[in-house]
Image 1 (tube, rainbow, N blue to C red):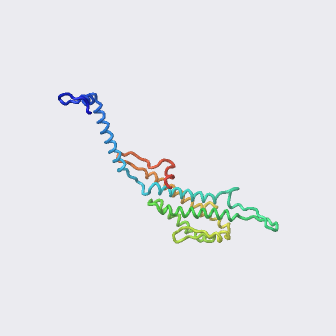
Image 2 (spheres, rainbow, N blue to C red):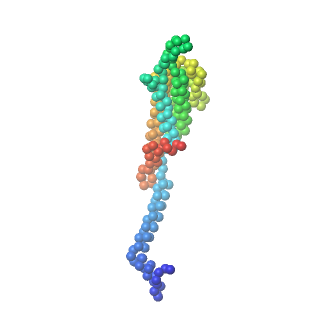
Image 3 (cartoon, rainbow, N blue to C red):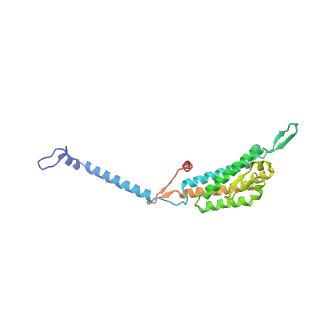
Length: 232
């Protein structure tokens, strides 16, 4: 079973294996793997993140900020695609007039409100001071415009979230809505600027979400685009 032995009990098969070096090679390979496993385990346990927020939290913040910017851009679009270009209408008596498409404008502003509330939630979930400060600035900006917003059916709740009354909105002066959401420097534009700042801070913080292991090696927690795929 163990190879041929002589009268002295020497196993010549085992002896040949040791002599030609294969036994030594096997033992070296075994101990090398064991050492590698221990090193990998230590490196993983020693890795630490310098970010106050998780990659998923930061991804949610970036996504919310991007949605709010897009909602604002939709309302500020100029030219033929502008929501604030009056359309020609003809009544039953054949009278021609030019009116705003209040249904489309309401839909766009309603999307803005939803995106704003999402941004408020995600920004408020952060533990990063710069993100929290910018989110607070966005809230203060909204409060400063509360009177004007209320004239078009948009109100601020006790939780600082916005709500929009469709009936009141469609009865409101669309020129006021245009001033709030279409003009450069208006409420919609300024909110978009705040969203851009929040997004920038989140991206900066995401870089800190990468880790250093005990050997000083920089380890990325995600690759380009992967951070967005971890939100579901």
